[in-house]
Length: 169
Figure 1 (spheres, helix red, strand yellow):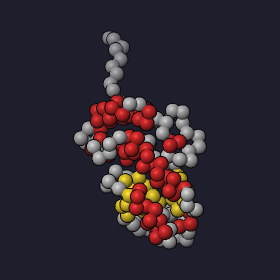
Figure 2 (cartoon, helix red, strand yellow):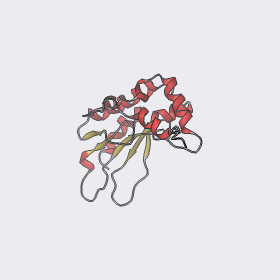
Figure 3 (cartoon, helix red, strand yellow):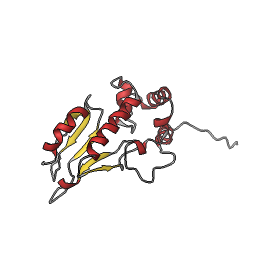
Figure 4 (cartoon, one colour):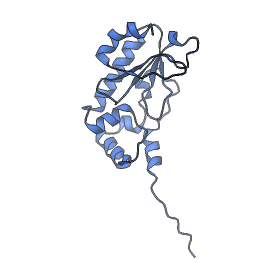
């Protein structure tokens, strides 16, 4: 009788460690302040290799919008994604009423809420989120109550021209 210990790899744990912020952001005011995990700082090649190794055909790992787009070849680099995040943040933080919300899923960039839209029976204020669902990379979700609306796909270049309309929803 032996007490042989057999260790098996736990892919989800490995990914969890790769996406955990080191050191954790105590106060995140920008998407850049959230870029503290291994997936943000390791070589892009290593990040993609681990993602592809663990992702598998049936698995959907929690990953930032840009990593899924990079994996498909829709983005040229992680630096391009960071530039998009920073552009959206600069555009929205320059306007009154927009607030950056850093508390989202593992390794995500955060999102922006339009505070004046949070009134009455609204369950969720107007929100801007980054997405890999289309190559504009930005979804605007109108404020809603009981029925969740469909997001409005846009791009970083069109977002500024759309904001006056968005802010009166």
